Image (tube, rainbow, N blue to C red; front, side, top):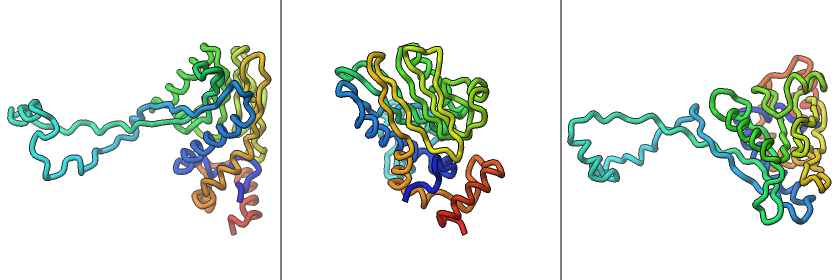
Length: 266
């Protein structure tokens, strides 16, 4: 059964759910884009790798099992240090590597990047852990490198991060909950935005290619609906409580009405 909501399901924004939805959507976007791309283009999944200092992983205790002899695995230097009288102090736990998939549309032999398609993650919109800064650096590289950029923001929380100015977006669109931002390489001084309200169906988005080729269009709503089914998010979404971040009272009342109509709330 598809998502109970006509557009984005706000319960899927939860920390324990959205990362999986993010990956699911990237895969379905790749399939949908490749199905309509001209022959000389191909959409591929890439991973942006970073370090999340907030998620540090303690080493597995099995690495230092009781049967391992002193200095084993460290060579003569470790053995000498152990006998020297220097104090052995445990290092800081290693930061957890963070991988975030996104799409690249490449042309010709695959070496020329034409368009990047991003589904923003929670990390992309969070200051202080490096994820937002790394994303914005890549965003700037795309613009300066003459690469088209499509940004899909399905998160109400976090800081505004897409190439569209938050103030100008609000001035032009009024209130919105989600949005899609498209930057065409031929006109980097201007961005095109589709504002999306909570009750709105997700839009069909033009994906720009080279200047001489017409953009291809991908309908986001069926991709979200298929992801909802494939990921079994009905079992993961905590519909009994409020979503995170919370909705306005009016939105909460509307959302609960939708869930009751679909038999997901008593």
